[in-house]
Length: 386
Image (cartoon, rainbow, N blue to C red; front, side, top):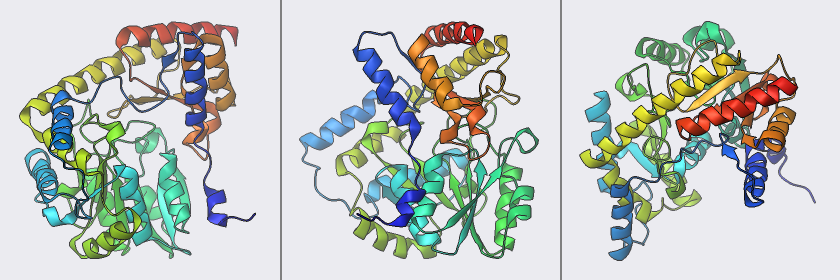
């Protein structure tokens, strides 16, 4: 049989295989510490769950409009106004099945065969895979300490080609957890606009920041496309709900795409998400953010003791991006052995980096401090054997 050749450009997401192996070990009675997937050990906040249950009891299970419940689009607009000082017309917001749904819409609208896309390396792999499925060529730009592990304006300018159509950023980023500040983000937006291109910003870890104030590109320009999600800051991973903020002229074609690709986002999840913007829920989410900050600091202290501390601590999200080249040049083998020998599950860097991923790993500080300290002790034993 033959398949669409674009599918061959989509690499496997190795962390999912590692998660499956970790769960199998756990089922066999091993004490596995999970630091591999981007899902903290917090349950969905109770106000959100209660609103979801109430929606089901009230029979809110029918299709919503393709762009989402008007009340939820209004609530998201209010969120931008209250926390980022951005006036966003609710009609510019499309509610989607997860951030992946938003990425799908954006990629299909913005690029096609022959177009080029700029993004940082390392980066979340699905970002480049969505662009490849649309037929675009992705130019991954290696980033490091000198650019704050981000695709800055200088890198955008120096790598932009005549056929480049789109630059995609992520702030805070996955896997490094680094952010662009307002001046840097504005400089990127101006650089892209000067070249008549499009800017797409992945903000799904927005709100999960520890050293810098949360920021949205929506407060700087109305021309950027913004992907966001209820999964990370709002703790609603399994509800599969996100949104896409778009310039006004893009709303109509995006709505047509949504109507044909997924009809609408899950209706009960949309009703539940309305509760995510209440003061009661905000208090819960901010307590969790502060707890994640304590976890970050504990894990940083632990890996520093082992000589593995990152050169620039993550400012947001919930990951550490660690250089293991002193011990291995095969991050997939390193992670597999660490799981089998010490029951610690982390993610191989080859999932995220086209260049250099073989000697990096990602650790997620998504469990409690005591478990993180135990994971560091197990990692120390493992490294001693290497």
